[in-house]
Amino acid sequence: MKIKDSLSWATTQLEKACERPRFEAELLLAYHLKKERTYLHAFDDSEVERVEEFEELVQRRANHEPYEYIVGSASFYDIELDVEHGVLIPRPETEILIDLVAEIIEKEKLTNIAEVGVGSGAISIVLARKFPNLSITATDICDTPLKVAKANAQKYKVDTRVNIIKSNILDEVQDELELVVSNPPYIANDFKLEKNVGEFEPKEALFGGVVGDELLKQIVLDVKAKNIKYLACEMGYDQKESMEQFFSEIGVSSYTFYKDLANFDRGFVITF
Ligand SMILES: C[S@@+](CC[C@H](N)C(=O)[O-])C[C@H]1O[C@@H](n2cnc3c(N)ncnc32)[C@H](O)[C@@H]1O
Image (cartoon, rainbow, N blue to C red):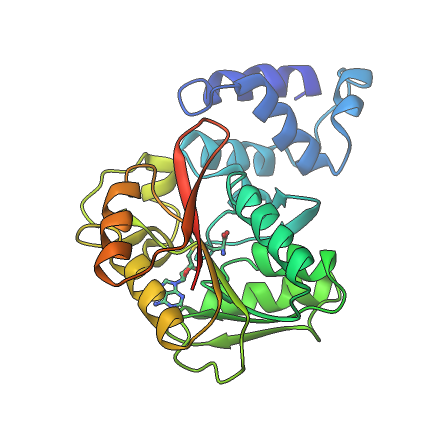
């Protein structure tokens, strides 16, 4: 099949699953051919080699599998992270959390921080690249994120400063820490997610408990108990009220909430 015919076929296949079927068809074909998208336009009369393999990629995407899992890579901030099933695909809104934390690190000249729930390594690797004197201990409870984050940290040559360990929250972390950052699972266990998320992304990265904010609250308690000065967390758009109520119950008085680009409440920074 020629490139132009393959693209027409793929576009039709992707119409139900994708908002921009033609664009995604082009991305998948460019990935399959190991070429830039511009090549597809310049050589649209060429035959597609191993066309059955391309058709398989398209069928996976038509079945709502996220593009990032199909190609094994996700763009985040200024880096490309390897991802695979079992690891959350990093989201653009988490870049806001990084910028807030970076402001504190810069202003307070912090050198020793931790991340809870490292996933692909997105937050820790970007921060380590921004601050050459920063050491980060990053935890996760699942083996696939631990493996993938280590590989990504090596890829960006920050593995000597990002120490990735298996731990529930900060239980296994003995260091003196100045700040903790986390994008924990914060969705209620019974929330019905879209197919591309609910059927493909890891449950451990999404669901935070019956209400959804249980792990968030436990992180606040653990950071407070360890006398760490700063905590910055992402949260669900509807969790501001319950978190604020919780802060008042446990005597936390210095905090700010932040919003995402769609103007939804998206997280908080506590100064203990
Ligand atoms: C929403 S994902 C965030 C991943 C990554 N930090 C990011 O922003 O893309 C949450 C991560 O927390 C991990 N996690 C869940 N419960 C945890 C716990 N009790 N302690 C440490 N990590 C946990 C999950 O395995 C998952 O990798």
